[in-house]
Length: 316
Image 1 (cartoon, rainbow, N blue to C red):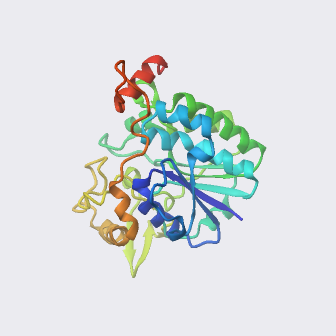
Image 2: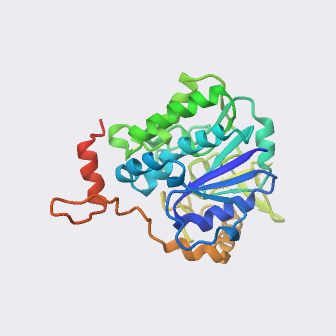
Image 3: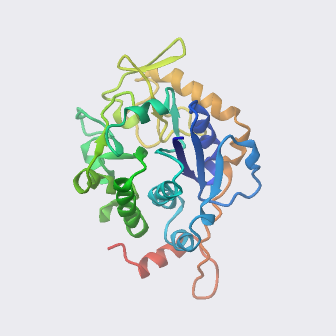
């Protein structure tokens, strides 16, 4: 059986549920929780929930001291992917960010894979201007989107994931000034360092604000399409329950005024999200925000602790 996995903190579990619910294929669904379960009832979900600390006990302590919640979730992608590969229970594996939503079969993507590791570029044609998001932005954040990729279970993929996890463990910071952008920037090197890397340029796959300049999304009779082809998945990156008036908090170029065609898609997604009984977790704080480090007088500290750790372990 194929597998799809994601990683998040407890505050994103309602979105994770939306993503997994949108997958109608018979696949194994696994959420690696980069947080403590606290009061959640795992039996209420139709996917497995595994605490990361139960999988990588010693490494977990290092990572929560070193990284904030965003960096941690990103660093874990190849680590948890390799864990699934080592289990040997899936022939093919898909990673999807919790803010993706599928409108077509995931197994169809698996079946059409030509390489061992599938990546999707942020866009496949040059934007007409330099407003977010353009080549100048992806120069800093990466050519390929780390929120969606697929891989087969074989030795080549194992080498890829081992190389990638070494990078995210050591240099998985959100620090573009030093040439790093969490897990994503390292994907630039996969087609250079490894064989059988598939760069999938389908316009109906992993659609998001960063490629709307080349992808015309339409919804008719509850069917979504992109440039006339059935939409496979949309990435609602930067869409927030607290700001439903914005396509994405990460940019101002695209709005519901100049892209009215997006309204039905976003409205339906928003309604599903607000109707989720697990949206109560949206405001839950990250369990490891306090990394356990202390200042010179023994007081427990949060963000400052990670800065101390970074000073002791320089970014470069």
